Length: 218
Image 1 (cartoon, helix red, strand yellow):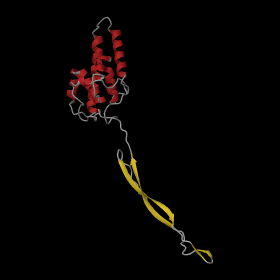
Image 2 (cartoon, one colour):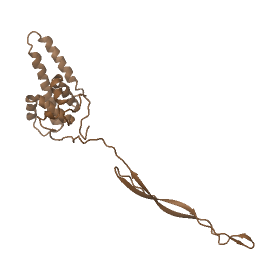
Image 3 (tube, one colour):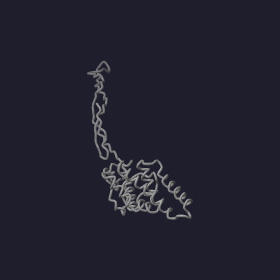
Image 4 (cartoon, rainbow, N blue to C red):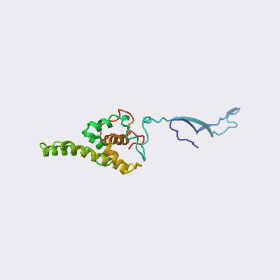
């Protein structure tokens, strides 16, 4: 009867089974005066013997290094609103330089399922800007600065409130609205750190489809 055990990953695990060997019995021969004869002849038969055989199985599991990754936060923000220094690139740089933060807002919105194509935010920004440029080129130049800034602010508010609801963050909608209005750049950086799990000052990239850096990434 054969016995076997499944190997344990990452350990040396010994297990045994039994093999069956068929061995013939010895036959005795004798010589008498009448010639060669058989005396006390034993009919060959099969003898079943069992000898244990021991195996050692070693299995190695190669895992992706996740020492710097953290579990995905649930019910709360990953860090504080003023922790912008924890990640300069890409969250802070993209918030300040890339279309007034629309690029990274598009990333966040797309990652959280608010929109299918986050880059459409940028297309909308460009369309509004050139439309205002044609309408108010000579009459009121301040509109060229105010309206695009308001457009970015509104998108930041919508994205933040959507994140609070979809991620079930324990916070009031009123508080998050005020945060998005009066701390808009810091709000965008916090949403980026929460969405992608940035773990260092220079971390990540500007790819719309980049995976997050949580141990339970999706």
